[in-house]
Image: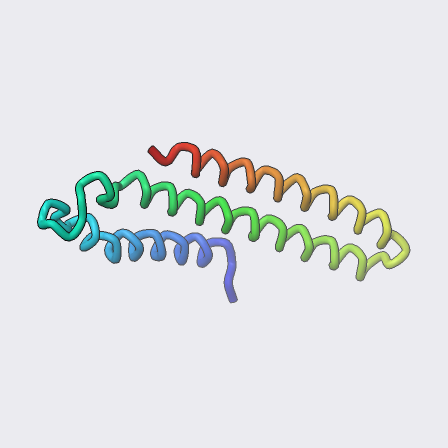
Amino acid sequence: MLNLNNIVRLALVMVVMAGFVAAPAFAADPSNGTQDAAHAPTAAISLVAIGAGLVTFGGAFGIGMLAKSAMEGIARQPEAGGAIRGAMIVAAALIEGFTFFALIICLLNNK
């Protein structure tokens, strides 16, 4: 079973593995004629990609937990389904709005 500790460990392993995979790209010599120095990959681009991935993962995890709780609530009290559904939609919209805002901040800080 995946609990929060296992999910956090998996996310950290994925970030570390992404760093190992990206290391050869940063070690490439851009002055050998195949690529100009202005278009060489930088650490900022990788950090933006990691940040965008974490923001997306967090938003998806939050909406997933929200939907799980709402479905459990509706299963326990079917007569309150309309109110729970409406509150769930508002909360999911707020989570998505924050996620889009954070993604825009990540992309704008790419210098």
